[in-house]
Image (cartoon, rainbow, N blue to C red):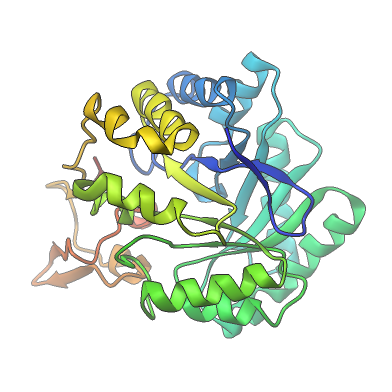
Length: 316
């Protein structure tokens, strides 16, 4: 397994990061035991980096995997907190749920621009205080926006950036992948740690699996790449791909990626519209009380499901 320093943070991470979103309640909804089994396999195979978030509901899965293996991976989490009070709640929840007294990386979730960064600054200042105390190792942002990466260039306190990176730029809300690459290259030059998300565009690019992996592995500014994994087979395959990219064709011959993943609306949807307000990709719309999905826009993040009061939205 290849390991890289995450910018100037001093944190050493595996190039393959275990993305905990897809196994959690917003998507596959694996039991704590089944999710922990996947993480355990990844840890035993050399993956030492896990990406999660308060929204994902996967802290218990990660905790159980650590208890079973005795291994302590690098953990990055995220929160939407705006205020110091909410930031404290988010950090307390993360530490308590994970059974830790320190978290390696904590990010402001889904930042869009300098304006949203400024709007979350009260929370961010609290994270900086905990960093000074040694409770947080490094702080930063996750984003689907080129503008947020560019804004982070002017904020030295932002040490880590977690942006969308895939060959087609699917999911980037305000530009192209070329523009995103230019921005992350500039961030890398400043010593910021960068790890990519959604290399398959949330599943929309699985038909070109090999090209997608080769594309992100070819971006030298990405110190790590977060991949969502839902089965032991996926874990083993992805570890093999990252360990021996020169044998990618051979490895993929033995595995056919699932390419039918989609967002589904159950019949009991009440058409309240809360999911349409939540979707940053503008992939959801209400017409005559019926929810319509623009599948070409949807990045299959499942975030809309968290806003549904009757749990009518699922990614599978």
